[in-house]
Image 1 (cartoon, protein in one colour):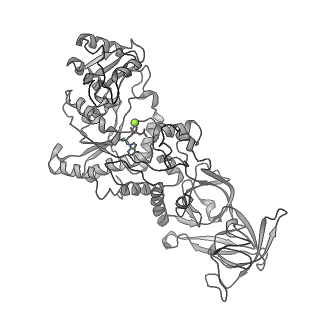
Image 2 (cartoon, helix red, strand yellow):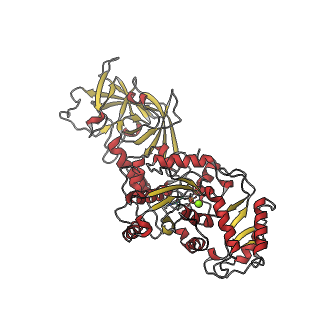
Image 3 (cartoon, helix red, strand yellow):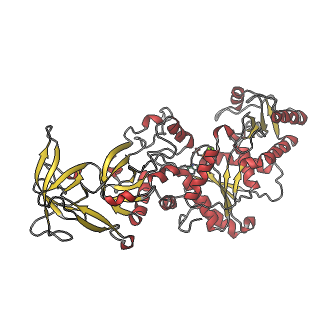
Length: 560
Ligand code: ATP
Ligand code: MG
């Protein structure tokens, strides 16, 4: 557990746990778990779940198990397992020795299933999936009992053994719990506990061709792992009676413990999606390049984009653990990233859309090295060197031939300071045949290095690089992944419709100050006036590639 982790000042889950500990429940021990299914990469929603589960375990001096809920082999893979471990670790959460797999318990779960058959509480059902759906009813119509419900224990044992032995095809038969088909809670209408899948499993190979269902597996795995507080999201509230039913109707081996399930509202972030299944669609359709595409709200995507573990943990700590659904503004995540990076990363200058400036009174072929701090408020970070020369580049956006309103940058006969350098005044403009400004002619004031100008006004400060001393780099500027605040909000409209077509702007050949030539993979900077950037793994020895992690201010708010 990372030292710096702060857990919410107050949350209802903590209150419940604190009370249990006070009352000496479970001998005052607290065991939680983080139970991802390895069917995709972890996303920002999982970060809040981890933060809560690992955070509570840490605070109450208990432990948090990492459990792979691997009951759907066709959707799972070792790649996902490895990515999940990498992401949990990177976020700073430590599961110690407690790495478990639901598949570790397949034999035990099978024994529980046999026990349910033997006590008349489970039966093999031959209804086809369509028939079963029809029998089950719906929210307004109660279900009907399956015609196979009253099979004898012997027949059920025999059929279940043959299911396990591989005698039947996928979907031909299932094992169901015998609970209550009239229950208003659909989950209690004789739920399936085992289904046939002739498919190898990433952990158990070809040992099994029947696999237990999630609801059956989850609570019993919690019990076997001595979990005390099984914290999940609100969608599982209606599953809680079933969670308890399984635990109440099997004989738990010694060393097990009765867990309790608690639900909190899942994190919903606007302008994005937090569902592994849907994120996979973005990957599979090549809408993004991979799970770790920096546009993705996956932990690996956010890492590649330049987010820090601290910024994500701080975001989680500031997100209330709520009992009812809500939507969190994406801007909150970004401001948490800004807050962290502001104090920790070096400043640098990079001109994204270069405009050439020739300094008429600078002596040709001479240069001057300017030494500036890496961080305006933290001298300990050291210094960097800039080179001033006869030709420099500023950003096209920092010049206007006919400025309007309170223009704070360069214009004809106006002056600006080159950040960390001299003040220049624009004396002439060169245009191409189309009337586009291609070069500015300026004078510099040799008395203004680190000093105020005498007798004239300066519009502002702009970033710049030397024409002779800079590094060409490629830059990726990201915008919202979706153009709709709630892309998944309408059942009748495919969320893919709302993918923002302009979610990536690629700039080839931006000009960075020379100190950036030594930047290494993953290194972060603030490009002055442009935002926070991080070196992408696509960089080559010839050309660095930078991802914009986040802009300096919330520009979304005004774009609306
Ligand atoms: P997904 O729909 O993305 O697959 P899931 O809930 O099926 O989500 P799991 O791998 O089963 O994903 O989740 C592992 C844990 O993370 C669970 O305890 C789950 O409740 C929690 N979790 C998943 N998504 C969120 C979210 N958006 N906010 C908070 N917790 C989440
Ligand atoms: Mg799931």
